[in-house]
Length: 253
Image 1 (cartoon, rainbow, N blue to C red):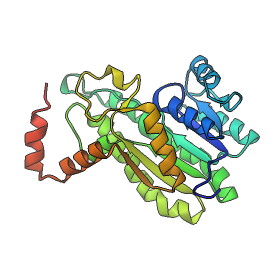
Image 2 (cartoon, rainbow, N blue to C red):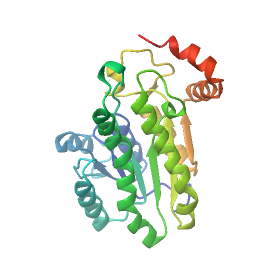
Image 3 (cartoon, one colour):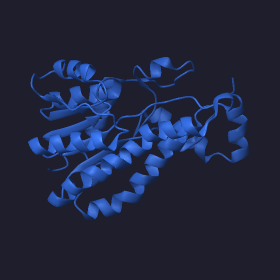
Image 4 (tube, rainbow, N blue to C red):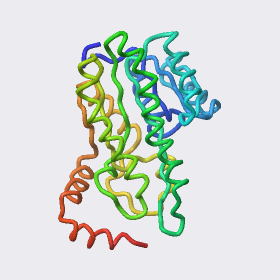
């Protein structure tokens, strides 16, 4: 598959709503066959039925925190056609504050946001290495740039995704496999609709999906958008710690 060519077969996790569903629509409209994975089969069926081109979607329900379920889903997809592009999008956000601080809840969030990605990569590698091609795209967040109040576990999980993609890049490229890390700002989804704080530069999920498809097709490694949020987070992360603390104190509720 050339960099500019639309992949023929795309696997998307977290595909039943939000950004995952928007990505499914975008790739199906471009002519790809999309394999959709999330926990709810009913919601996946509805997503597949709503694709702009009939017959472009197939459903593989699985809990991404369960290795055996991921194994069965990937095997079933690969039996039909090779996965050209895997978009590992499943994730969640849970506020982390001192009153509710617990290692168990942090571990639960990491199981979804981080370890589901490492497990998916583990299970994809034998297939992609054998044919010496493939593309893995990991959805992280600009929240991984810096730790902010109430987002300790979320920011840490997204920072970890960035580091693991950076670490894997050279090794995977040697095997003929590309990897990309996607760092959006705030995207309008059912998950962000629960947020009770201001979300600057909020972007529509369909627009976000179009940006991602365009950047992936051009071989970008680190995809960050919208640019205003990307710049703001990088500037905040570059400040001396004393200035960062002054700003983050204002975020306390």
